[in-house]
Amino acid sequence: MAFQPSRLGTKEHWDKVYEEELANFREIGDEGEIWFGEESVDKMVEWTEENTPPSDELSVLEIGSGNGTLLFALVEAGYSRKCLSGIDYSPDAVSLSRAIASSREMQDIQFNVCDFLTEEPPVLPKMTGDTSNNWDLLLDKGTYDAIALGEKDDGGNTPVSRYPTRAARLIKPGGYFLITSCNFTEDELKEVFDTSETGLRYHSRIQHPTFSFGGKSGSIVSSVAFRKL
Ligand SMILES: C[S@@+](CC[C@H](N)C(=O)[O-])C[C@H]1O[C@@H](n2cnc3c(N)ncnc32)[C@H](O)[C@@H]1O
Image 1 (tube, rainbow, N blue to C red):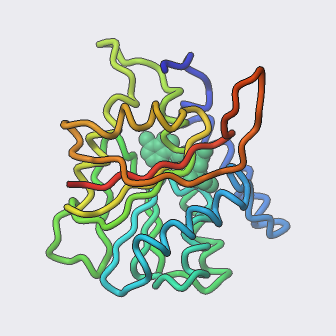
Image 2: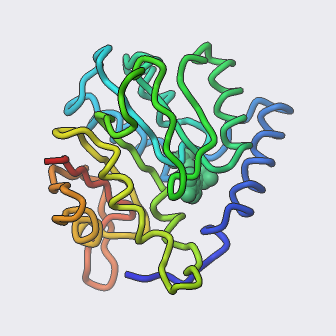
């Protein structure tokens, strides 16, 4: 499905959001918005525990990590801070997640400014010698949705069209990609990510509460996992 471009697809929008969230955190300790609510965080953590249990060998990258909520929840579930990395293109998002990490004594989580569509995500310190294409698990909660609202370039290409192959390339063979979206259905996500070009195959889904509307039932958010061949 193609969406009308919106300000949610612009860096200016996210820079403003995180400038405010960072100021709030500094003033009153508010850690900011939990996208799709705590239940979606809990369910993504449960899926991760079942499929990639905590281990010192693991490497996990969150694309568009915002205030870092999902990675903090993984530490609370027993994941080593040294296995976790978050990237975001908004510098204040990275400052906010680092400030929250310090307040929770979780500074070893790596948070870096990086535009996922144009830059290579930095590897973890323990991945020295590895190429950047060696992650066990890539996570996305709301970032693909945001990127899908970006404007087409001069050649008429949407930024989001670059996402699936860029994501797939970073995952090691046998590794996973878990995505939670509110703008795309499970079938739409499968169509885009499970292709011969990405080398990803549908693996599993997370069941979210369903709602009924006009005789159709569906979930407000979809979480789908893919595995690299
Ligand atoms: C809906 S928010 C979700 C944030 C976080 N995943 C969470 O669940 O709290 C989308 C995030 O994607 C980031 N983002 C959007 N486009 C990006 C890009 N090209 N590279 C890196 N981050 C991006 C935004 O700055 C924002 O933090």
